[in-house]
Length: 191
Image (tube, rainbow, N blue to C red; front, side, top):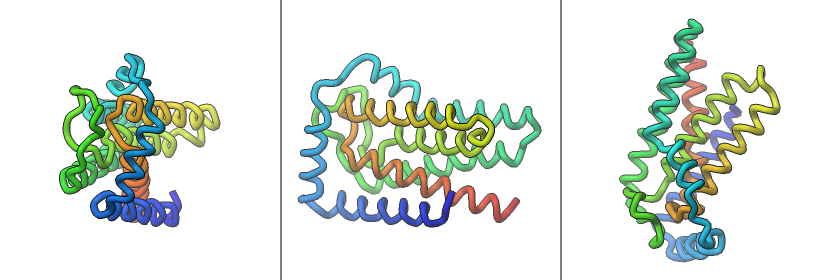
């Protein structure tokens, strides 16, 4: 990933943090946009997508991927996979607790915790980037289309289930890109 993309994602994240914490005008717009995007699209299929991409389950997928890489004798890459998602999740948890943003008022009782950033989108974006980095050159356009579709379904599920505001999605995506890029640069420098 390009250093400029990492810088841009960090800038977007910083702007979102400042506005979510301090701007009632921004939050009013975010609430308005949320209501315009979400219109009774809550369905069982979106709950399945959310379950498959739950942050806790994403850790399981990450361990499976690392185990596959260890089996292929790619131990450093396996370590990078574990550290990248772990680091991204830790930063996301810290940010979520620091921001204390409440979820949209219509969210499901199944959703608990704070809203910014979306843990589902954060983990999925990070895993999509990891898989794209590892297998994109070999598997080509089909993989990119599949990964993009998975990511988009997770985004739609989080909005449709009324669990997040649009800025929560953008913030999670920006944070994942930044953490992925940083992790990649650190591992390239060390190994």
